[in-house]
Length: 358
Image (cartoon, rainbow, N blue to C red):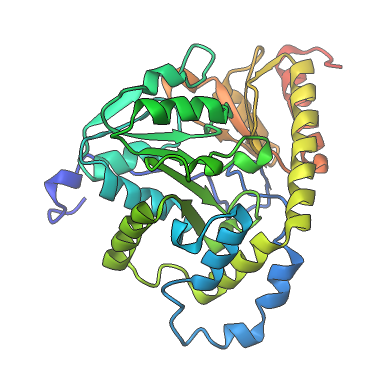
């Protein structure tokens, strides 16, 4: 680091994204991207005519996209904010709402800890249970802002809305932020609760189930006062936070419900296949309501399995953290990609133990 870096930031450990290889073709099952292209409606509307307008600033209100999100979720437009990925909205939330401190799980989305450190927040780290699940009782009457990834990443566990509601009721003076990046793959959304509780903020993304990771689109749904606060952060930081093409992509991506349902259904089918086959190979696979599974082998440790798959041209995510270092997180791709993963896994275990694996 340079001698000019502020001392407050010198000890921050930045978020580490999953590998994005440039020099070799891999089957990428490491960053929870969709294996499917964007909706044909998105492709049809992002054309040369729209690209020719990139000399002009985008609409800072992103009204076309906000109206589409509001219609999809059955809320008013003043209850929606959008951002440059859900990460930006999370950053604004940590900046705006955590004066009393923040609480989140010990094994969860890594950016929570980064943002807490970046803003110098008092932090409560709440351990998952022995089964790697969130215990809602641990978040009741907690006295600070709460962030819960639901379903959780990287474990895949999902709380029912009834338990989210218990947390909301027990924290009337604290904001509860529910990060629903993966909810469309089998979870239960908390959005219906926003009209009932004024201390709820739901954040989502177009990166996973809308097949638009490269467009960087996130959204927030809450009461108008909280949305106004988020927009204050946005207009104090980057008014043009979504580019012209991303606004178009998000608008038509969320309108194409038939394509959305088709893609999410195929991913859920491939997930069930993957879980079944991994269990046959002596893997423990945590219950998942996401587009990934979190699994550990009874025959090979997590790092060795990750590296062996990489040698065979398949990338998964391994976390070098004590509590979960024997696990890998495997993004669910197409059925064909998952079949190749299973074949490679069978070969790896056979090579390690010198025996045939059925």
